[in-house]
Length: 255
Image (cartoon, rainbow, N blue to C red; front, top):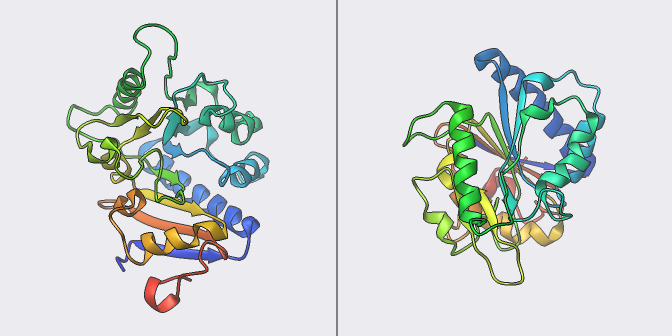
């Protein structure tokens, strides 16, 4: 196992959230000291909600005024839609009102008009990222922290098995067109994720145990989550006992 990849298994949700709060505090303090701001990209879904809620309630002194929050992915929906990741964050993490509104950088989803497409939203998000990080064409932003999850099918962010977005090597954000039942999406691309200083996977539940084993131990490249390999950053898997139940210390380095 690469020395930059670490696996942490905790007893319950409270312990995983406590660990994440400590890592957020450490990474944000170091980032602000080093470059004057802390840039984090977050995922939606049910798994991180307890952590986001605990962050909103934390008494830890954090550099909120220098924290800039982005999304790892978003559904192609109005930002006030119940399934919007941005709305989820507004209802959990951002209820603490300490983060300046201008420091929140949602995916610019425009769902009305002839030019309203997931691809157009992805290009607008890419321009926003380019301006914020002050990068040139061909460069990728360096997030201080990206928090991701893993689906039962091995997807992460909105990078699904077999998706064309998995092969994107030039753009910072990509559209993801799914079947008629699921909403189209916009996602950060693998090069962006793999340029981050710290990538944290948060995974809970027994239903994820099998895919966690395939990603952590077997590094099955048919699963998008296995393709997350930061080039010079840290990769941490934060699991509860159920999600980590098929891992062994000897084989997978679980602790």
